Length: 600
Image (cartoon, rainbow, N blue to C red; front, top):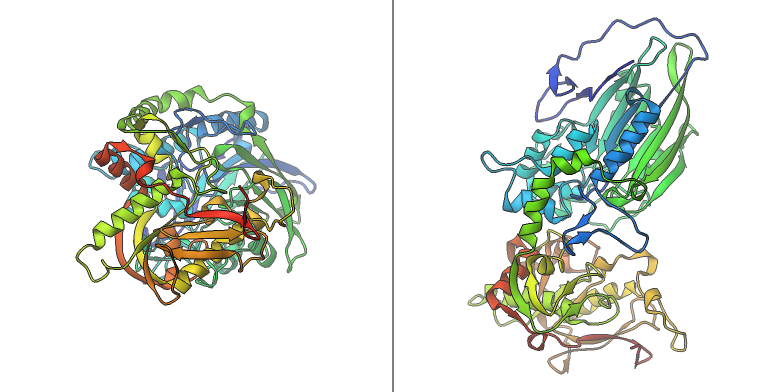
């Protein structure tokens, strides 16, 4: 028996009408005459495979280190590995009994994806096909939800990527800002042909993250809006059931924790997948994304039906493949879900698919050549390994470039006399600037995100609040406790990128004190910071837009903004200087203490 691949039913502001897709061709959504029903008690099993947060990873390769990807757990990454796993599952289950979906964050994250958005952009006339589209088309994806990082390069790049995909990009809660009609297909419908004479209709509802309205405000303001996941699921799930869906799966670019990183700036929850499962009846399973965690199987009891909804989140970058195994039975004239279970497969158990390697070998080679360009030299080696617990020169380099860029931009303006501070995080604990030749990938590795730079005005009191909030990152440690540097950070799960060091000030972080009372000795140019004094803060757009919910900065006056990535600003600075010398920018501005005694 066969499978009608990628049968899509949906409506959007793009098409303005309902259509159905079989393969790549659009055909009218006609209803076929129903086949005779199976005898009661007949069963049918199928599997839905899922990935999420691929972030531009095709190969098991780290473009920042220029070698095969590896981590402490010896994970592997990339769609070439996923392709091998997918083909193994299809061989075991029968291709006609499987679907393959994704939960978003596809086209940002590696230098491979950056190259085809910025250096050799897919939006150019006669431009290339995005490597992620090529790989996902070749593997045979059936649908993918939009992630928030899909919007990082602007709507034109996203639309071109959408055009290049042989499968729909789904986003029921991505709507046109004026008409509030869907800006992308909300859902897709897939027909699985069973050996019992009656097909199974599987609906996939795509939901994305409301935080896009904050994080990519520059790209989407006035163009798109992003209502909450729960309300849009409550709107569409009954509709899908009324259309005859036997199974409803949600692909949600939203974690399961029920938390938000943007405080009260939006009325919607960032990590709402668990809430959707709990509050919206009629959902059988949810493929979870966004949180970059591994959840093989997580069951949430729906309040209205009392039935369990099965959630699963495969690990980021193609490190895992989720399998939802469904068992259906024919009862009372319809297919009903008898059981659902979920598990994950590890990409490090299989080789890369030679088909995907051959398909994109030229693109890979171009990017390797691009990132290995020499752009300058360094007088000494610098590492970020201790960046989370110490003020290290490599983080000072980021801050120095940002502060210097803002000072130049504000010269001759009414803000030129204000002192400029800068914030930066340890985005990667493996970033290195080597002694001697510095390549583009060395500099780019300091800043793996597509953030841009802004300048906001804060008072001394607000800067103090900002630093206190940032210092939540450290685990409270008594003065007489044994110090293990590996256990000092990430308190309450706060990621490294949500701890900001502020450059231009001198201060201690007393980790023996409770949260909110940790910043001591805060000074500027040798004198205590005046709470009423005004400072310009060089800050990335993610933080300035409310990412991480840091106080004051999102509402502070913006006095300058740049459209280029901070990563490119660092690369340009190194190229212009030719020589990187920490003596010109590195200092110990902050340190960890306990009761006034330095930890290190």
